[in-house]
Length: 92
Image 1 (spheres, rainbow, N blue to C red):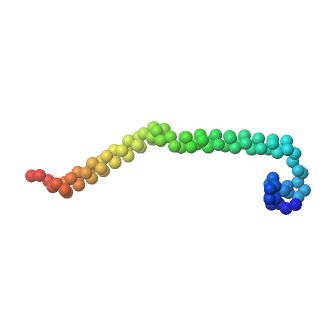
Image 2 (cartoon, rainbow, N blue to C red; image 1 turned 90 degrees about the vertical axis):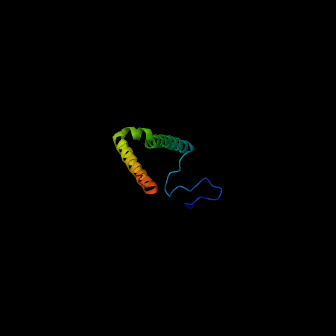
Image 3 (cartoon, helix red, strand yellow; image 1 turned 180 degrees about the horizontal axis):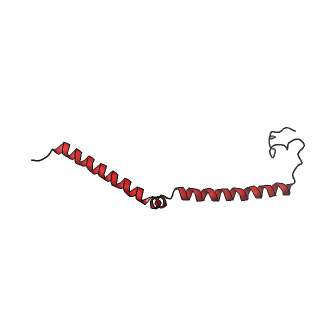
């Protein structure tokens, strides 16, 4: 037998010298793999929820967020004042 799947077959042939598995062993293996996959998906979902929680991240970094907002406001306000002064000039 070859190690590649046969057309219409159930998958690759077992390795030479390997003991063939019974249908019950295959079912048990599939169930174990399914349970492990479900656990991995659950962990991944928890990680995604934690990472994409922008409100929680903002709450944990409130001082930095306030500082960034203050600097951004100062820069934008100064920029608007400079543009306004350049466009409309100073009134005397």
